[in-house]
Image 1 (spheres, rainbow, N blue to C red):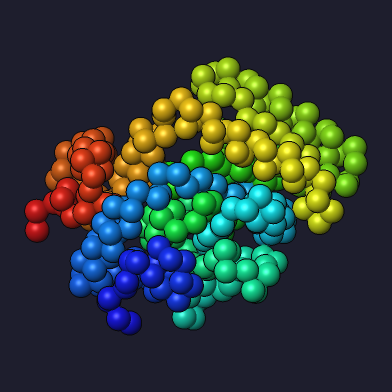
Image 2 (cartoon, rainbow, N blue to C red; image 1 turned 135 degrees about the vertical axis):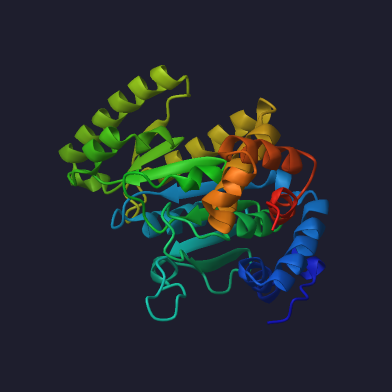
Length: 320
């Protein structure tokens, strides 16, 4: 693969150039990382990423995330907003590539150049995201009005999505046992909006909404977080989709209006970079830099100074 990617063509939403840019940030060769740093710098200088709304969609497999994502994309497009989608799929046990399950289920207009979907293999990573997801989100944020990240499907502890998204949408379905399990596990602490999908199931959906509202209210009081909205939806019929879009946009608007977005993104980027640091350099590397808190503080300083994700990792790298 060529390591030369024209940032102007990426910013112009040329699909092939956007795809090459994401392939570049996925490439783990040293020479590719140097080229990726230059590309991310160029995209950052455009300043367009600051206005992008990054929405993470997560939840257990089989709850209808991809169908809901399709409905959300149609809703944003109807509002005239361009959408970039990063669909993180399970890795093929043979090739290591994405199995394309999420991407195949997302319904798109093939002629709409304002929507771009890229699948990315999870690489077997726990947390529902791939290692390169953060950098890929940075690429897409410079190009599209909304970036939507759909995770591979989380269990009870995989919460990485909150580190790359401004707003987290957590999707569950009623009568599956998931509601109680997620309340017990604490994963309900990460969402800003909750969609109880398949609301056409009737009374069990109403009960699931009530259970989640009660649990989230208690969690919000204990943590000081804002209480997430809980909405009943049916992605297949369109019920509740407008309300979910409004709730997602209201959350982002509140963060922007409060002047919190730059600081929130720095903290999230630092948390994600700290995880990548541990994956790259291992426990010995973390210990050499003074422990995980020291690593995170150093990374946050680098990011606050304008460094890209890969630059920050390189600057804080332990001595060989």
